[in-house]
Image 1 (tube, rainbow, N blue to C red):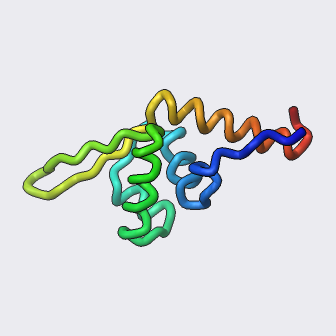
Image 2: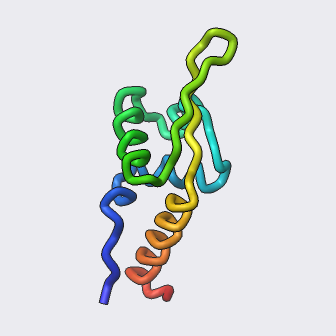
Length: 95
């Protein structure tokens, strides 16, 4: 039988954010926005959902008097992403 897909990760933009963070571990908001071609507002909402799920940490600080938002993937986020990929592989018959 097919495994359930994590509804948090089953959003295109949230999955793109997690895929980026899996490879780089942490990234600035503007980098994520550029790579995903998302609007700042939509990306903010999706990042908050990932944060609420415990998949990422969000660090807000100032760099030379400019606000900076850094997103870091958590251990729980890595585990959730790996489980999501494994679930997708079961749909593809790769398990």
